Image 1 (cartoon, helix red, strand yellow):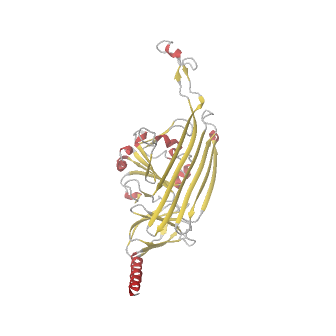
Image 2: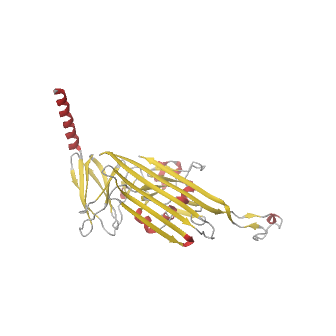
Image 3: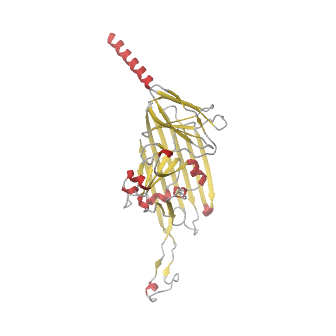
Length: 371
């Protein structure tokens, strides 16, 4: 009996010691007028890449309890406000207060992970990097990821026809297959491509339920290997936490283009959270009236917190597309019997590009990861 009592005392003592070594971070999120911001997303990221996410309550308060001592990056986002990030350190048993004030118009403080593989504030990096957050992508109102990348310094986007046509993205003048595409740090590539790149998928990548897109240009991409000598494009999924919310959107435009979108996120109790996005793009008439295109894309993230200090993240991204393409122009026999320099006469010396109902391109991209 004495042994059992001694063992119980030792367990209680160990539990108390662990509790004393844990720390807590709490604070309040306000605007420039010191008014509370409810529903703001607050993310706490360690220097090794794991993160915890919560949201502010009706009074703008947030708390991260029972966390391990160490260095963290605290990132706060709210619709209509510029995001802010700060590097903080907590010691054993410390209760740290970190209040955050979000300005309406300011330069965003964004956390990036691409330059060296670990989370950093963007002003800590010495590499040429551009970050497109979800709000910037939404403001551009582009249907494809490649179109959202237009205007970034050192990035050249070429699209050979209507939406869904062959698209190439070049960073700093390098070849298209010298650009690596990552999903939350996981390499995306086409197994059938001779260079093992993601070039065949560029035209079908859709910014569905992304937190941000990081574009790293130049020598800083050397840590990702020879297939990234031009640069790296890292797609970071949205965090899965906060109050449950769902959004639906519909767009329409020229070329008989229609897009439907569904997005949702929220927590599943105290131990899990989810985030997902679904979209459908239809182009009924291309630039010449025939180049139809359809793309169904979906992405999702499920975060599970088995313990206070561990996070299990399951990511998924997939697209299924079907595009109709044209036959390329080709020379007719008369082009070889009309002298040394024959005139280009459509239907006589050459056959122009035509809409061939039997010519098409189908892609299916499925990516999954567990971290």
